[in-house]
Every structure is written in C-alpha cells, then in structure tokens.
Image (cartoon, rainbow, N blue to C red):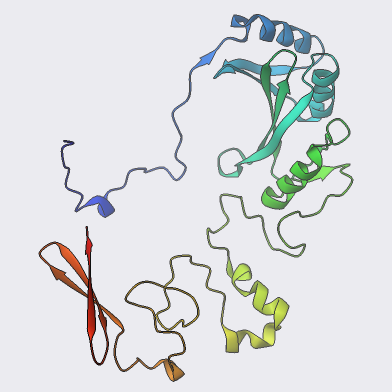
Length: 269
C-alpha cells in the first residue's frame, strides 16, 4: 500500500515561485543523425537562413526568419514533399520576449516525416498569410488573430472566428483573466438589454464553481438547492430545508425530510 503523506498544509505550500512554470526540456538530437532530415536541412540552408535546427521526439524543428515563412512553406511543399500543413498557431511570449512564436506543423506522407517550422514576431508585428500555399491556413490564421491578436496580412477574410467582432482583448493571451474581464461580464447584458439595464440585472456570473442556493431552475448542489417553484421572494429561506446531512461513524446519511414520513439513504465513502 502506498505510504500516506499528510496534506493538512497543502494549501500553504508554494510549488512554483516563478510566474511562468518552465517545463523540463525533452532531449534534442542533431539534425544530421537522420538521413532524410539531413538532406532536407541541406536543401533548406542553400536557399534560406536557418538559425537553429534539431530533432525533438523524432521530429525536425527549424527556426526561420519571419519574412521567409511563405517562401519556406512553398519550398517544403513543392521541393521537399511536405504536402500537408497539419496545424499552425501562436505561443504567447509577450512577458518573456515581447512577442509571439509562430509555428507551422508540416507532414510528408511520402517520407513519413514531420517538420515543425518556427519563427518569432514582435507583439504588434504582422506576419504574411500562408493561405496562398495551404488553404487549411484560412481558419487557423483567423483563430490565431482572434485568440492572440496576431495580425495576418494578405488574408482573404481576416476577422474573428470564435468571439464576437466587437469583443475586447484576446482570450488566449496569458494576461487575459480566466473568467474574463469586466467587459466580458457585461457583454450579453449590454447587447440584449442595453447598458441602462445593468443595475437591474447585474453582471454575468462567469465562475463555473458558483452555487446559488436560491436558483429554482438549474441544479446547484445536493443539500443546497431549493425545490422547483418554491417562493423565494426577497430571497427568503424556505420554511424547512428539503435535504440535510448527518455524519455517523464514517457513513454519510442523507435524509429527505417530509412532514409525514422520512426516507434514509446510505452513501458509503
């Protein structure tokens, strides 16, 4: 049996003193250790500036200049048989490096190889669209703009894809609050009823763990919900609590109280 460790002070412990946790690096190998990747790197370095290259988890990773992204992807597709763009997005490094790392995940069905092309742009620096090379980039670039605020030039339809067009800020940035900011709390109230209804309706509750014991239409939590249809005018407590808890010898007793009879259920831990 696993040794038990007391966890009474678990909430008082600070596991990470740094704001951004840095995961351990996976082992990296030289690109020339793989015959196919070695030839690909040689062909790429003859035409473009490759600042770094290595193999990580059996996948070639290369770093290029941001202005070469379209030409490099075109060369990979037409010359090196990487005919599929599987994924592309951005990584928020604004706090550490002042910008975004953009990556393109390439796949060669002919060679059965993958290549990850990476580049870096400053926070407000635009990047050229690769839609002309891979149509798959259409929605991926729109999502990158919508979630991170990365502006992509020469895209056929550069607009938000998930959030409303007038949404403030970009939800996947590390500086964006997990439950949204003040603008997010009032968005639906302002849109549906107008700002004049703010005082009457109140802000949207965006905390998924919130429990309202007076909510008669949505399930809240056993022992804290009010029966459907109960009069809760002015937030008054019902005459009796429909469910109560009682601890007896390691067994939780859930009692459903009625005026005439009672039913007891046992839920063993």
